[in-house]
Image (cartoon, rainbow, N blue to C red; front, side, top):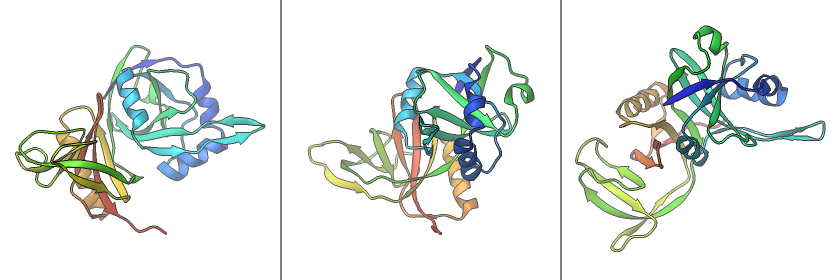
Amino acid sequence: MKGIVISGKGEGRKFIMMNGYRKQIEEKFGFHPFPGTLNVKIEKESINDLKRIDAIMLDGFIKDDIVFGSVKCFPIKLSDTKGVLLLPEKSRYKDVAEIVAKENLRENLNLKDGDEICFNFLPFIKPGKKESFFALPHIGMKESSITIYYDSPFMNGRRDLCLDNAKNGYRKIIIKRDVASIIFDGNGKEEYENLMKWLREKNYSIVSPIRKVKYNHLSEWQIEIKIKHE
């Protein structure tokens, strides 16, 4: 995914250093964040898609009678640096996201305003949602808004085309399980391989075929898994 580096108003530093946010980043992503964010201008269509996708959340809180909103978080990799793409609930921008990492990204990557950056989304776990569709069994390369694959998603294999309603379709229910996810904006082959490799490394039990969810600009691989909750 691409973006353009822009200057912010310094609010990222203030918010990141608040205990209510900083501690959640440390707990959920395993690093102590650098006190500041990298502001990135991104296509509005992609921002809108990310707002629709379930993410890892930083919970909002109240401090000194001021309500600080929740923040959607997506783990990413920029160059060789891991970070988190942030979409604050209360942001007034429609085409800007922020990136936080354990280091100063502008300085370490020698970035300046106007530079184009490319970053990749990393796999993450999110709670699944129960969903119900009408499904049309299909063999071939055709896809729908949600496509559930039973063979390789890159071959003319068996798949269910899931629609809100369909004649001659059958009711298909996606039950609520933990879901491993990775987001992409290309053909998804590299992300598919990264997700499956990550699942093997984590030793998670896969309990469903992989499915692709298409949005306006972005897409997402999802696969239901079973993990131990302590």
